[in-house]
Length: 220
Image (cartoon, rainbow, N blue to C red; front, side):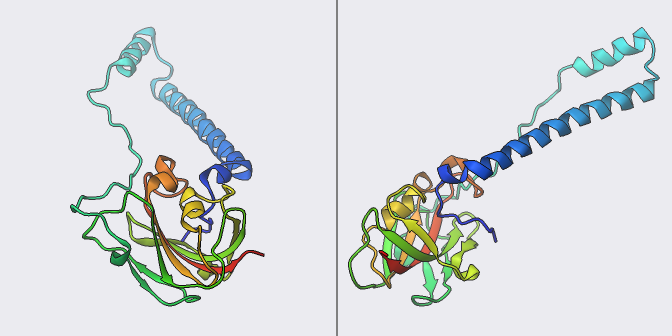
């Protein structure tokens, strides 16, 4: 299970340390390619003893000959088989009450919803959350494509804090937690365009996200 806290917005997690980390990764990949090219050149020279012009011409001809076929590596995608109907909140299995670490079960006989699904599994009390308010949430995340738990604040034993509507989290959270009451357990089924989209951010591109959230505190 990932240590990343996935409600954070893709824009936020791509800045700062994460951006520098990817820059270092790209530099290392470039260096590896350069080293690999150099190693191949040295090996070729050793095998041919840097031979005659005829040998060099033959080698050049061989290396410049077009390949018979080219394969392009593709990134895994969260595309799923079509079943003819979209899942609803009632199709998602969730065990446990407020405060319990939930078990989330995604069915295999319906398609991931194409719109945001919001459903209170346990009612809360008090005023509903509004944009600009501080929220303290527990959550568990399962990804639709593999039906596996990816992240959970319950497992860490530390709730997640955010300011609602401030863009600190993915749009599916900023929209889906409006009106949530303290003490409520809310199911969020978030389509890719309100999650991490084609970019993935550590999940499969175009992944549907299923969160069970507990509103530990609404407001300060």
